[in-house]
Image 1: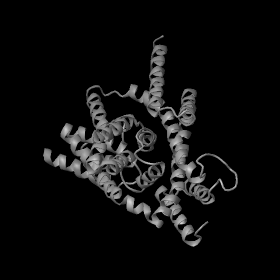
Image 2 (image 1 turned 120 degrees about the vertical axis):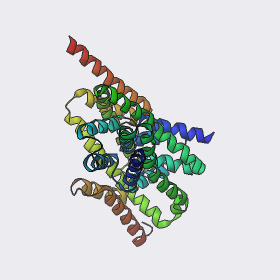
Image 3 (image 1 turned 30 degrees about the vertical axis):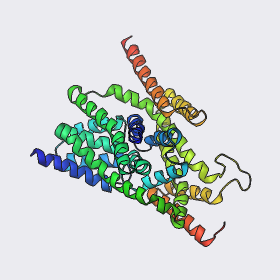
Image 4 (image 1 turned 45 degrees about the horizontal axis):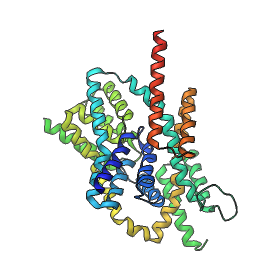
Length: 190
Length: 186
């Protein structure tokens, strides 16, 4: 039953992504690529790119997108429902507990030790997106013909604009896209 | 009166969720502006605790932020209105994109655009990692740094299931809390 599968996959994503934003990305990748093969790594990368360009959390965007791709509108509904249900249960319970006890310290201790793990997992997901873009073989190799030059340039330019010029991430990504369109139109075949 | 609160919750979260780029933290700030500074329905100190709940819970911060505000103002009906408001915009937008995606993907220009943006997305993600990792290192707590290194090795080289890593890190946090309590008592 595909609806149940979608619901359960995104329920796990919703229940275990602590830290917001990119924290959901490693879980999404594991569920929809490794476990269920619902998207290719290329589609997944496009999905993350699209998520950056639109409002809304990555997890909700992914649930709606994957649900639609796999099983149409009902699929999107069940995937998205699965994604928000853990939040609803957990946060409502905590709000209730907070109203009664006004104390959050144990939770914050646990969260503090989750943060380093989450950072590392986001790093791994980022590397997994970047490597195939730069190396056609998908792993480090600096032999001639094994490195795509233009993505390396875009990456370096993007890092410069983000870190040194403090430019908006959406603008930086769009510039990378526009540069590639221009490159392919002006120098076809390279 | 109750209806007015509910429609206000729904419309605020709907509006913020439609037009806020830049992730959950931005939405939480805007929720505070609306319900603390403009409407005075929640006081400043309590809002800080509500934000802490939203950030410590699993799931998207934007949705969690909407839920804490909805619960505070109108209990369960408030939660339902807040979640609907927060989820409808991305649901509609991504359904539309998904509908056109297959056709879009074949388009030469769009394909080149998405390909070029991949390098940019990688840079954005690694830039976020650099900031977050820097914050962890700044705490000068060896346990946190060991956790960060161990998680990276487990995820990258051994492809350990993400959920196991989260459980292990949470367990380390619980142990740390217990040890600190025992020390304080001794």
